Amino acid sequence: MKISRIRLGKENIFIDQYLHEPYREMGQKGEEYPSLRPAMLVIPGGGYSNVSKREGEPIAMEYYRKGFEVFVLNYSLKDAIRSSRPEDEGHRALMHIMNIPSVDTSKIAVSGFSAGGHIAACLASHAKRLGHEKVIKALILGYPVITMDERYAHQGSRMKITCGLDENLLEYYSVEKNIPDVYPASFIWTTATDALVPVENSIFLFQALRKKGHIAELHIYPHGEHGLALATCETGITDNRASYWMKESIRFLEENL
Image (cartoon, rainbow, N blue to C red; front, side, top):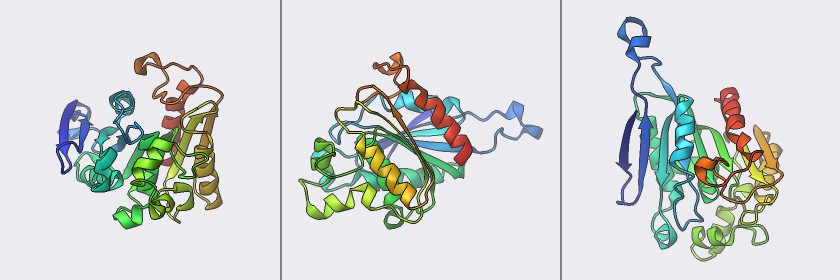
């Protein structure tokens, strides 16, 4: 495994990348095997106040074991969002990934959790403005922040990403209201008992995607608190039912990448 940290501008904006060593002994005539791999950009949550460690490397390692080249984004938080949007930083991460020689650029996915799920969904919703339309082929979203409707939004994320409830930004960052004609196949999972990011966020996104005819799969597990990550002891909060999301997401990626 090759591990490195790549700066994306400011000192605290970077990606940690986990790349496979080439398996030349398995290739023909000394060629690398496989020649290209799918890529996964992981975006941890944290309510736009911090970047969760539990939703970073542990998630990355699961996709790495499945053959992905994996990248974990560390993005702007709190007041820094006023001068540098996390989705713009996500775009820079995608452009970096596109230039990695071992990446199959036709098989790039993004996995986001909570506020990181909001960034991932915005990367897809605002892809044309950002300049990477059709780059993302699949989204894996865990208990994502989606709506800016004050009845269902995560209030901390809503306040920070809209820079103090700017009316234009409230509309812009309500993902369910901004679904374009081109959107990645989306796997969404959450729990019915999430007290921080209500289940309606995931339902609204699923409904909006289906209305536009996009591929979407929604799993609502019956229980489990917010921030489950893998939902195993490895990430600190366990839930046997919800822990199946990872296997289901791998199956979804096999079908849609």
